Image (cartoon, rainbow, N blue to C red; front, side, top):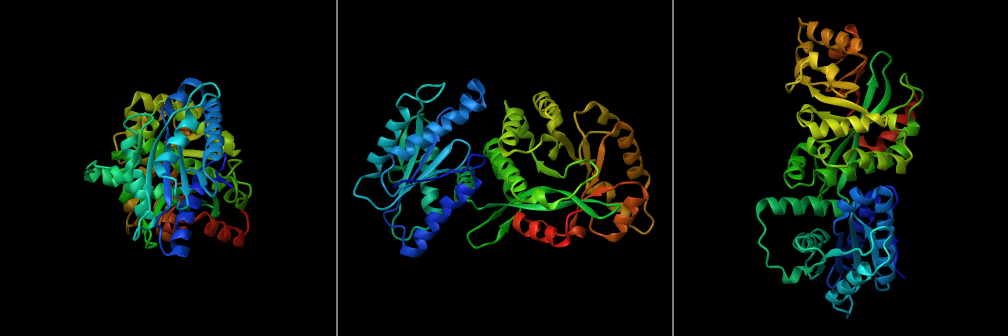
Length: 427
């Protein structure tokens, strides 16, 4: 029997289970010797999305999944790992992995995919040897897929790999391997209504929990994601995960709030917003996860508004009901007078603008002006990095009512935060 591990909304849990399968086999057998891993990437999937729409693209994913389950030998595990990537784990076998990969490739190419006809896949393969752990086995399979992607329909085995990887490629492979193992963990920081100290939502943060259980925070690896050209794929993957965790647990912890619904805030980088179809992708994920669009705030830095393509995509997204927040306001070039021209609903005030509010004799005029102008324009204001009770009280004085920061607790996982919120009861 072949097991298929996939969630229709997000691939996050499936990737975690895929990694768990390798971890369990390594632990139970004390070796991964002979274990076979195949990573398959659908060729030109982004073009399928754009040309035929996201419903058709979903049908293609279902087609690929069914063909894989039918073609994978008994005892295999099939899993969708990212937007257009599938993984297969097979126990040791007398059948060469190259023969299995060829059979899977042929099964995919057979006619029958809805709307688009034939589908081809690029495949990277690796066989475990004594001393390999799951990270190394997946790294080798990922390296093979990296080379295979350079020519659609190609099959590359790690044992025959002669490609020399530079530092940037190695960093990309490390990030992709972490995705395949499900090592990226979402943490959430409460967003508070400052006048009554009630939580009204959360902001999502991505962390990387490595094999030694240490956490890497976004600043240490997101630059690698952006340099590697992975921003769109990585961001879409994490956005989908956040929507599922919000819809299946976190949202229920919040009672009525002033703006009708509790909010899930998700950071999006400028590179992701510049991708063609960005707004459609996010809207599609929201529809599949069952969220109302007004529940979500997309946070984006000022750099995105330097690109006409980004502005157009954000306008399209905002038209669906998703709210847009200008992150780190005050760090870049956007001035108060420009706020009315941008497609935004919120501004998040950068910590540098409020640093002086912690001093003995603070000047409240700037933050007061920001609050007054924002209220005049109908734009919400959120202050981040609130760490002291003094700062909290001074923000209240000038009428800033929404904020977040370590004063209200550190970022935590969805499960831990859900338990904490339920313990104090809904707002």
